[in-house]
Amino acid sequence: MTDLVDRIKPFFRDHVHAGRSLLFLEEIDSTNLLCLRTKGLLERQGLVVTASRQTGGIGRMGRRWEQGTLEHLFCSFVLHPGDKIKNIPTITLLTGLSVYRTIKALGVPDISIKWPNDILISGRKVSGILCQSRRLNEKVVVVAGIGVNVDGDSRQFSDSLHKKAITLSEQGISTSPQSLLERITLELEQILLRAYAGKISGLIEEWVDCSLCIGKKIRFLRNGVYRFGEIVSVDDLGALIVKEEGGSISRVVSGEIDHEYS
Image (cartoon, rainbow, N blue to C red; front, side, top):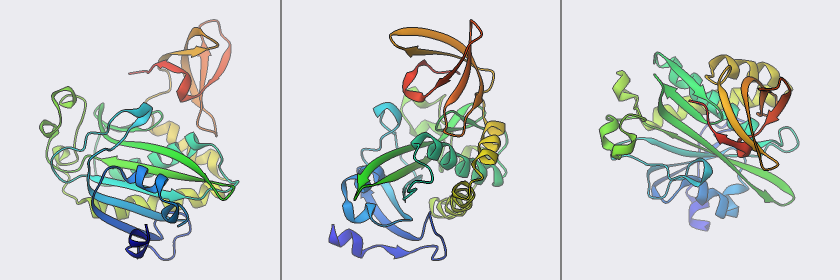
């Protein structure tokens, strides 16, 4: 652990929340898991950990994040929200918004966000976000992991992902994981500064405008009963507001969804 901490370098020195310092690794099982199991990393507010390769990347609901065979971005931000934002789904949305802004600014067309944590190009996944938390010294630390498919085409992934995944290269975008990380870090810092200053509602409105979820049908499980409804909004804590078939309004979190919209 001491060796890892000693390898941390300054990144954006003037940042408060995201990317104040950087730890680069050639290979690791998962940047998220490394942060979560290493106290010395969790203590470093604003640290971002990135790796050239991940051998055990993880996605939402315990799924495996497939890394591909070429250059892609794998990184995790160590965030100390304190009592500003206690709800991890909110941080997931804000992190996703930083990735969306970054990719859109590169000139990529037909980009959207799929609730709660995927960035899509023409309906195919180019990026995923996974936020996890750990209590440290009576405070909650959030590790926001980001994966972006950068180089090559979808044939480098397994057969099951050929039609579901997409890369920036396939859209004619030439960039590097390092350049992408710098751009995302700048966006995330500005977004978190706004959110912690009490301006989160405007950010959620921006997220909704970029999202595919409004008007989509979902099935969710509550108290052992399947319910069906249409997504009408997203609240400031990152939950879906759903109008059920009978007309009642429900607040739905990701763990309750049985069938995702498509």
